[in-house]
Length: 168
Image (cartoon, rainbow, N blue to C red; front, side):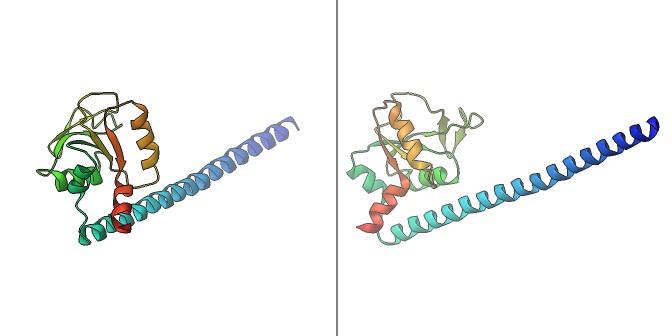
């Protein structure tokens, strides 16, 4: 009798553990699916913004001239990813470039696209302008964070500059 109760308890425990593992496997797939959808959404937004940038360029948008008109003579770019490197490529030789800025410590103190990548902390040599090269809804948050550092630089969101060019 006691062995039957013990065996029933062990079987119940095994069933419970298996059910838990099955639940966790399903939940992991759901989370991975959600992360995948989130990544796809970020890619969609980036693609749309890059397309809008190209449309603005086709309509005569000159980023360097726009920045100069806004009083920028020396520029740093926040975001050392693909968009930041595209900005460096477009602006090199047209405006004085200081740094790439990025929060990722694995990128800091390294050279990318010919510029040193710096962390996000107060410095006097970022130049008189910073363009936030984040092509998603986090650009405004990062703009505020950079402004909160009290830098002697005007901070612009790349998306805002594109929007302004397309509405002119």
